Length: 158
Image (cartoon, rainbow, N blue to C red; front, side, top):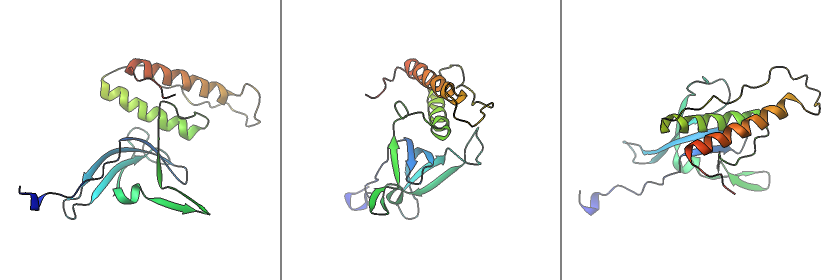
């Protein structure tokens, strides 16, 4: 291919965990090129909602749109912001599920085995008790994440 026929630069987003400015969690898998327009496209999956928890639905969006800034009120924020599953705070169910999915995928790709992440509580009374079952769940998720990172030899970000 001569230099006049070179493909345009493909802006590549790092694979990993992202959060939409409205709160949903996503896993970016690949940046690819559209065969018709040569436009960069991001392939990702939603890690929330009614998707199949075993294999969430895959989506595609132009990379330029995925990585653009949006205005919310008087603030400009990324449409999708990257988050490190090694260090994101485990303080809500959606975040814990997203981290468990992404780290579980990393274990699978590495051919490593470990116990599954802890199950979500089913006995919460909703009164915000001290020692709530959810506090125990998030602590157990933190231990599971640490064990995954030790197994994968991936130090947590400081």
